[in-house]
Image: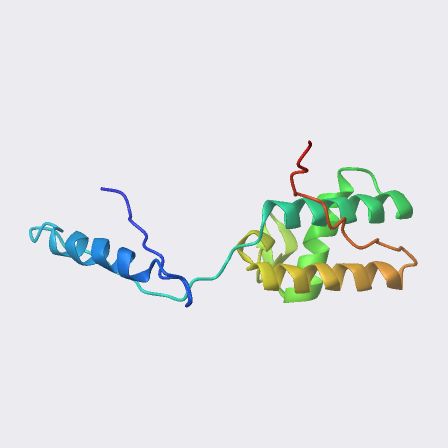
Amino acid sequence: MTGQQFYFHAEPDQSRPTVEAYLIPFLQKLPAAKSWKITVEPYRKPRTDTQNATLWRAYGIIGETLGFDHEDLEALHEDMLCAHFGYAEKQVMGRLRRMPYRRSSQLTTVEFAEFYDHIVRKAAEFGVLVPDPDPMLGKSIKRR
């Protein structure tokens, strides 16, 4: 059996009684011959694909303005992670490398927005203007 997730959304969401009605029987039917790990934690909305696309669009603008090669954008990303979240220095294959304490893929939408804001401010320090994201980015346009 693979893991099962149940979400209790904040009020005024009306689905809580329905989820509860499924959850209790689910727990009661778990085989007693096996041990089970049950974790309850607050829900944190992960960063979105749109946020990720916006981040890499910003890196492209920074790279183009400062004359980076496309391959340099990954190094720029690593440097921004280290600058924002801090880092540890580790030996990797005989080289001392900076390893950021956090990865952008693990950030919530709010944390990701704060990270993006850091990048925009850092770019401005180097004279690079990163425009605000397009508010329509990631939205489908309904045609008549």
